[in-house]
Image 1 (spheres, rainbow, N blue to C red):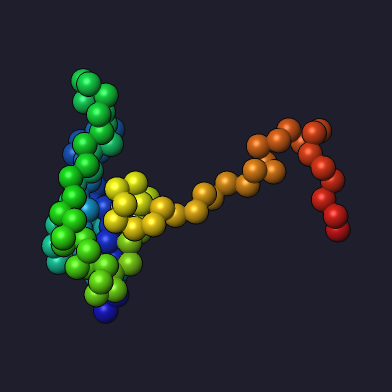
Image 2: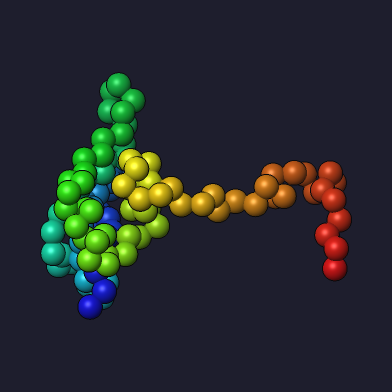
Length: 106
């Protein structure tokens, strides 16, 4: 059984709120889970802060027994130093306008 650390969506339409859970990889996104290990509110409050609460001891436990984080959870854990930050997924060559790029060798 593969355990995943992933986000469960709650909240209203266009006002998401997420629980970070340890769940079986075959379970549906908002279905059964083993444990809640944190919360994530991507909507900034009046002072401009996005709230993230993590149970770091439980996250470290689940990672030690082989739980695989989803992409977004890995990004969050990288920001807080629980996991190494994931490598950037962009190509610097795409940031240069096409007319200024060096031709690719074929």
